[in-house]
Length: 129
Image (tube, rainbow, N blue to C red; front, side, top):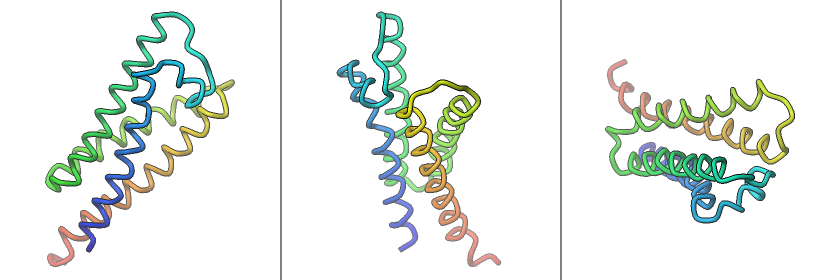
């Protein structure tokens, strides 16, 4: 049961990480996701690339649903990504309400990922105690 719960949580967080891929296919989606339009080709390239990188994190988490031995690595990658974004957001001022919302979603995702870590270590070490 705990493995299934961990898998469901990883899948949900993985899907959340796939959502920015919308920007890769349609750069105007940054207005809806982040509350700001992309101005200039250089920023368009950077935001579309960011979408790909976040999608790779999401796909890694979804892969870990089916390969439990890969979960620690996938969670580590996702935590680094999310903590970096939260740090950048909350050590800066004048960001949009949408960016704040993304950061708060990432806080929730971190909590979920820590729950999965707890489930993982509980299942792994409960018989050794």
